[in-house]
Length: 270
Image 1 (cartoon, one colour):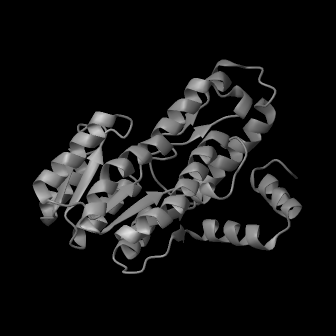
Image 2: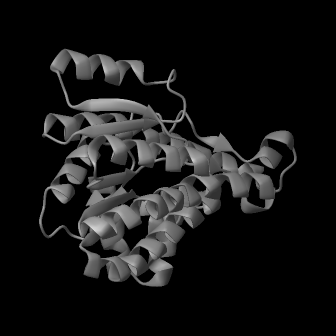
């Protein structure tokens, strides 16, 4: 399970009537439904595919019809695409942006008019420390997260006069299905003679190591709860020691020093 699972339960356990959305109802929803029933939580699981305009609109309209308002939205859908930029097809790039960036855009454009009319609302975008710091072989993933960070930073000013707050949650490495669901660029899997294969293998070792040193997704859920229950939430919440350390290093190092740190952490420098 992951951030969405833990966040749904955390919010419901703290009094939020929660709609946990899944792309396919039969996949991954049974456990959260069982827990909600056992604990008598105010939680429903509904279908929502962030890649589908109609699905987003239908889910939004259904919630408003049932509850009359939408007060908090968490944009969490996303996955990691791993591979050298040159080995990554345009189709893979489009698919990554479709889910990680345009998925959040669809949801925001659906709920902002509702929140604007309410003169109240919080939109939480789960980006990543990777929305501010870039590692090799994750270029498209970082592109989506940097894009969502930039969009969020801009629209916070547009939406503030209407009582809508934009919040960024920036986790470091999290123990979740994120690593299992990682996709490899199609060209890289098809080719045995990529010019990047040697350094990509080194980076893969670093990724595997990173996956062994993670925080539990409940830590991210706690940060989200803190943000949405605050009258004056911060714009950014960095979650995890690894994320905090790399952000601080970026602030305090020269460009060259920081590049060397990234190469060392990526197993690309002795």
